[in-house]
Amino acid sequence: MNAQSSSNFNVGVAPELIGAVSFGGLRAYGLGYAVDPDNEGTIYLSLVGYRTAVRGVWAALMDNQAIELGSQLFRRMQGTYLSKTVQLPESGLDHLALLHHQAATPYLEAGQPFYLLNSTTLDISKNEMPHVADRFFAMLDRATAVPLDSSWSEWLFRQGLKHQLIEPLSDRRGIEGWRVSADSELWLALIEKGIQQNRIATQKKGKSK
Image 1 (tube, rainbow, N blue to C red):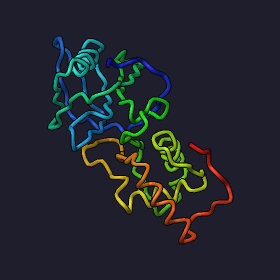
Image 2: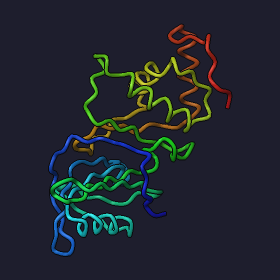
Image 3: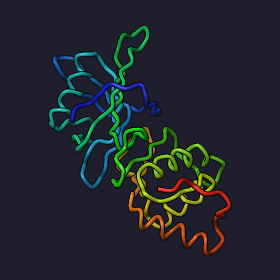
């Protein structure tokens, strides 16, 4: 499946030069990335450079060629990629962001692990949970067959981390990310335990699936 242009995602990045690659004598520079350490597939990649070089990296990845930036190797992961290209003012350089469909809520495939990305480092001890937990909840609701209540979002996120249903991505720069299990039975068992222990309330009912 090929990459498709999209304006439906907006993943920010804290710019951090991670290396360069040349195409047609021109260079493209990596600004941020997230890679699944198990299959070495590229989840997210942010590049800036002249259009020829940026498009060269894009085309090579879509053609299943490995790309090396700095000390990191990037490979295409099975599935669709969304792409967004913006021409930077004054410099005329292109900024390209590639995002795997399992990291984009409207496109993720149910029953498969998905990726939650965040542009800044999350401190769960502070009041930084709501926006991340809300996005996580929307993705979990789409990926699983579990009836969910939006009031559980922060509790589910914390418990998912505790029980390793949510695992931090170690191979990333300029962005934070987690791989999330879409195993409905495991999430349902966690929810049932939370209800039994009065950790979460059931006054509001989520949609039935």
